[in-house]
Length: 124
Image 1 (cartoon, helix red, strand yellow):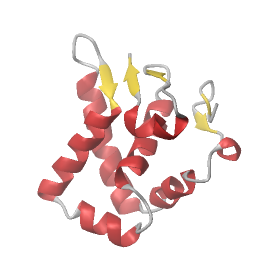
Image 2 (cartoon, one colour; image 1 turned 90 degrees about the horizontal axis):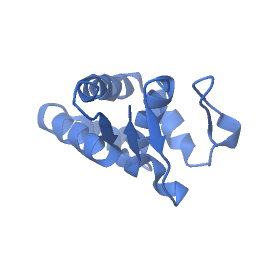
Image 3 (tube, helix red, strand yellow; image 1 turned 90 degrees about the vertical axis):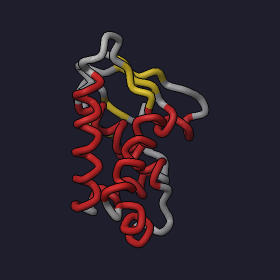
Image 4 (spheres, rainbow, N blue to C red; image 1 turned 180 degrees about the horizontal axis):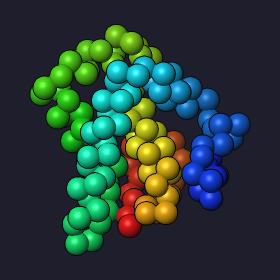
């Protein structure tokens, strides 16, 4: 397990090397905070539906589409994080946000693990 769900933290020593892309992105305050805000808004909305669940792929695509319409997010992301895939990085960010609220959200872990973050499903 890559996270200590009891303490709501990522266990960095157990993470695969590709997580370095997320930690690099985490240091990009402008873009990181922008997407974090968008994800938190979506999560609050999802909590109000009759059967609350999150399909990561749909949420990530929705955030990327929204940011593409009103912000230069895609250009900035690719300029600052040339070797990273925005969907994968945002999937890791969404996982990290949900981990911080693990008392509320659970997730169904899919295989193979490399697909976990952009394709995970979470529910209340």
